[in-house]
Length: 248
Ligand SMILES: C[S@@+](CC[C@H](N)C(=O)[O-])C[C@H]1O[C@@H](n2cnc3c(N)ncnc32)[C@H](O)[C@@H]1O
Image 1: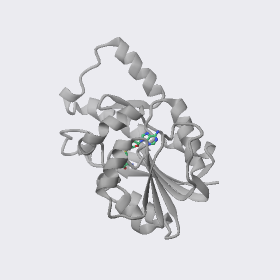
Image 2: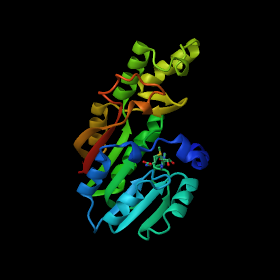
Image 3: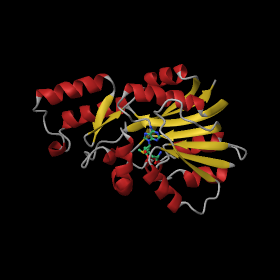
Image 4: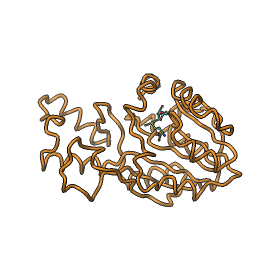
């Protein structure tokens, strides 16, 4: 996803973008932040968008670095949270090499590693390791490929929301979807987003200079996947992955 995609999204942000903080019913991400934050810390919120995590982060630390690729998102965040005096705003692209980054004791990166381009993700991971201090912690959530496939399996098996999931009619689209799927790239509202396997995350973070400490499901309601989920459909719920990792 290019910067322009996120800049244009800003004005529709609340309507279009999934609110992880609100949907994380067990507040597992907030719990992880509280576990690792310290009043002396600088915490970096990577891909902070319009600042949904600021009310959690700001009281827990000395300074919050609010980083996003989109200046429109940062402008909205600034306007909404002008009362929080320890937030510093930084417009940066984490998929650019040699970008200047602060080094922080704790980082969060909540559903921001979404780009379908492998080369951009590679640089993103490298930059994650550049902005976390040694022994510092990083809390990341990303879309789960396992969850995506489970949803599609259930949709087909039980014919859920038939009109929203029409049968594939074009071989060209089929080939595109197949090639994307092999890379863990699946469409959300017709926009390709990277989805991750749990074991893939372990490997990626290890290779980026982190020790994975914890990997956990952030579960949501089935209403986040389907307009009309069957009333019997409960567990397993759809989920994102949360990984907590320590910088080596
Ligand atoms: C789905 S939103 C998540 C927002 C927020 N973390 C939350 O939990 O509410 C993804 C955010 O990541 C930002 N983003 C995407 N790619 C980025 C990049 N390469 N560098 C910095 N920010 C990026 C987007 O601008 C957007 O604000």
